[in-house]
Image (cartoon, rainbow, N blue to C red; front, side):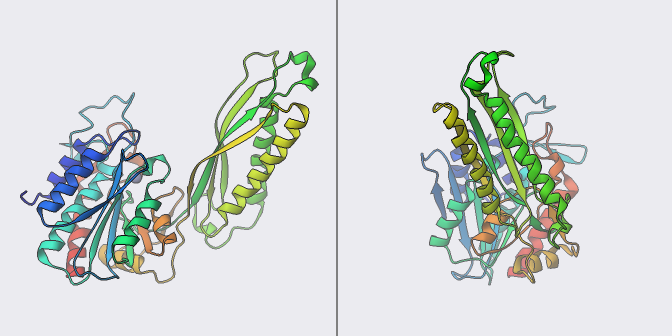
Length: 385
Ligand SMILES: [Zn+2]
């Protein structure tokens, strides 16, 4: 296949509607074929039921110490959104590239693919790698197995640049987090007989009260130096979505809600999660003492490590040099960068676009951002030459 321009690669990538709930294999098949047509071998890491795959590749000398450009292949749905143009076709108007994923984050991926092929053709003295995950939008669950597989096959890169939209600013820290779906099982009786039943709503409220108390406790503490760089400057716990009960005069048989925790990097996510689990176990025992059928069931639905600002990190050094950005940025949402860092890579976030456009109807990438991303890739190619 002829060598495509970055924009042509983007057209291909956006054309695959890789919504997280479906398969991404059409995109992976295409990309694998495209890279193979330029004599670049890539490797797949399959999910358990082989409906999705991550893809990674290496060009340049077969040695450690390279740079890995990393992104996710999946996008969020367009259901119920009234788009002005086909979300699966890149449409340029008014200095913007419209299309689902142009910003989050197929724009960066397209430029990375282009850079990989260029690096292979021009030759580089330091390796360049590409890593493309799946299920990022479902809570960053696809990257850890991909990274593990990569480490088994490729020489370890020293710097990872995760191209989530940051306006090409350097992001060297983000919060980590975890989340639970909570199901409180009650026991239905007429509300006049309250003590002989279990109201799942009223008991679930005890756990929610614990969440509120924990927030108050955390916020009463002085912020650490790392925490102080965040907005807000502390770990937060949140309850979103609650459902339960069938009538005003029946003790609720079920109450479900979701708890998420966004944790400042360096603070112990597992310890906080364990405190919550202990509280839930205590409530579970109390409910079972009233009615053995009652209880509390937790299902962890995501867990993402934070990204800790590194002292003199290789990734930060590289991105500063290429973008000229000397500011230090942190964000309060999670990315795969924390997972790369946890696996031993120096990692930062830097990519074209504004996170405010991610997941929106008429998602777009400013052409000025697209150009800034390309300049980054051109600079990188020079740096690696
Ligand atoms: Zn993203």
